[in-house]
Length: 533
Ligand SMILES: [Ca+2]
Image 1 (spheres, rainbow, N blue to C red):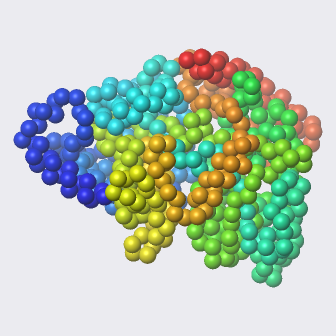
Image 2: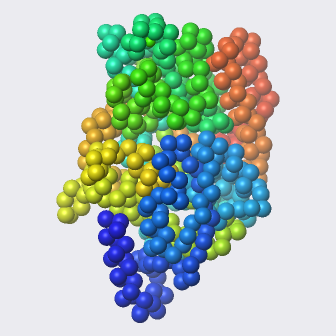
Image 3: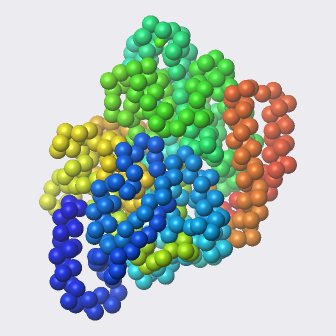
C-alpha cells in the first residue's frame, strides 16, 4: 500500500507541479516532496533493545526519505538511558532538529518551551499540517491535554487508542508450569503466593534441577524508573502506584507511600525476594534480558506485561504463557491501574527544537504519519498486504497478519526491520481500531480480558499528566526530582533488604521533609483547574 501511495503521489505531483500556485490556498492534502531543495535534519530517538534495525536502515523510513526530499540523520539513544540523555541534550547547546518518539514530561516540555529550547507548534500545525489540524479539531479532549499552561503546544503525542492499552499492566502466567505441577490458576493473594512457592520447590520447568526456577520476574522500564511495573501489583493491597507516586481518589490527590496497603505491598515483595521467589534482576534488567528468560527452556513463572505482548513473544517452544485475571486480596477485592488519563496517549513524542533548520519541513514530515488511517497503520505495523491487510475493498475492516507472505512471523523484531513499530509516532484513534479484526487469537483473548476483568476493577480517576505553569513547575521540579528518586531507591532497597516499622516511619517522615505535602497541594490545585476547564 505504501509503495502504491508513493507512486500515486509522485505521479500526482508531476501534474501538480505545473499548477503549484494552487497550493498557496489552505492545504487540504499533503504534497511531495515536502521541500524544494534537499534538506538534512537530525532526529534524536530512542532505540529499543530488540530493534532488528536502526532507524537509518528501516525500509519504510528510507522510502519516505525519497518521497519527502528530507534526509534524516538519526541520533539513536538506547531506550533504557533515554530520560537521562534527553535532559543532558536539552540543557546543552547541541540540539537535534527534532526529538522523536522518546518523550519528556509535560512539565519539562512546558519549561523547555518557555525557555525557548523547544518551539511552540501551534502556528506550524495551523498553517502547515493537514492531518494533525483536522484531528485536533475533532478531538478537543486531546488538544486540551497536550496544551501547556501558556497556551502553546510544545510536543505532539503518539496515540494508540486500541482497547488493549486501557490498563497499565496485566498478569501473565506460565501455563506450562501450572499444568506440569497440576495447579489451578491462582485467584487470591494467598493462592498466588502458594503457586510461586510450588514453582520454586517442585522443579516447575521440569529439567531435573530444583534450584533454577524464576517464579516471578519483573521488567525494569529504565534505570530511573524501576518500580512502575511492580506498582501495578500493589492493587492486591488496595493501592496502585506508578513512577509519579501520585494517584487520585474521590477527586483528591494522594501520595501513595502514605496510603494504607503500600507498606504491606513492600513487605510482601520483600518476602518474595527473601524466599527466592522474585527474580533479583527485576529492578535492573532490560527488556531483551527479560524476554530472553521468558522465551528460554528454563522460562519464568509469572510477570506483569502489556496486554498485547506475549511474554514468550510468539515463541511457545518451551513455555505457554497466558493472561490470568487480576489477583484479589483474600477478601476478593482487586484494583488495577489505568495506563494513562486518556488511554493510549503518550505525550511529547515529537518536538521541534529552537535550532531546527526548517521547522515547516519538520512539522510536515510527521503530519503524513498522523492520518489515523493507512499511514498510521503503516508506520506502526509495516506495509499493507505484508504484516497487515484490509479485508474488503470498502476498507471497513483490517487485520494484523500472523505471517507475512514470505512465511515470516510478524513479531516486533520483524516489523522493526521496516518501521519503528511501538516507537513510531502515530495517531491510531478509536475509530480506526474499531475496524480491526484480530487474527492472532491471543489478541482477542487479551483485549477481552484486559477490558473485562481488569477494566472492571481499574481505578476510575487519574492524574492527567498536564503541565504546570512556569513558576509552579520550578517548585514542582525542585520537590519532585529528589522525592521520586528517594521513593524509588527506598522502595527497591526495602523490597531487597527488608525494613522495620521504624524504618518505614522514617521513610514517610523523610518524604514529608522532602516536600510531599506541598507536592500533593501543587498537584491538587492543577487537577482542580484542569477538571474545571
Ligand atoms: Ca528446574
